[in-house]
Amino acid sequence: MKGIQQVASVREIKSIRSIGARSIPKAQRSTYLELYMHRREKDRLEKELFLLDKRKNTAKRLLDSNNKRIEKLQTEAHEEQEIKTYRNIPTSQRAVVWPPIAKATKPLKTFSLQY
Image (cartoon, rainbow, N blue to C red):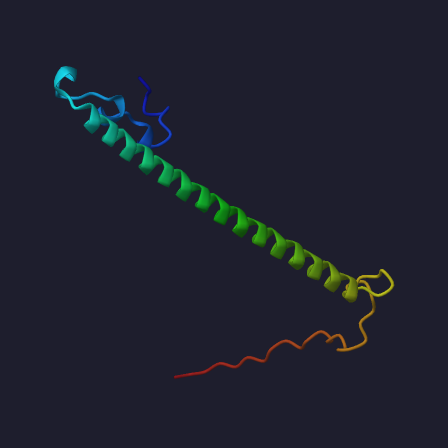
C-alpha cells in the first residue's frame, strides 16, 4: 500500500470500484451488467484522455506563442540598444551637450514662523 507521500493525486487512490470488489457473489452477478459497467468506464477514460490531450495541445500552443513573443521583444530591445549607441560608444559615455548640466544648487533659505 502506498503512503500519502507516494500518491501523486487523488485519482491514484484505489476505491472499491477500481479494485473490482462487489457485494453480490460472482455466481449471482450478471455478465452483461459487468460488460456494460466496464464499457462505460472505458468510454469515460477515453474521453478523459481526449480532454487531457486537448489541454496539452493548447498549453503547447500558448507556450510557443509566448516564446515567439519573448524572442520578438528581445530582438526589439537589442535593436533599441544598437540605436542608442553611436559608433559602438554607449550614450552614457558620450559627452552630452543638451541639456546643460545644472550647477550646484544654492542652499534653501529658511525662516522662522511664529503662531
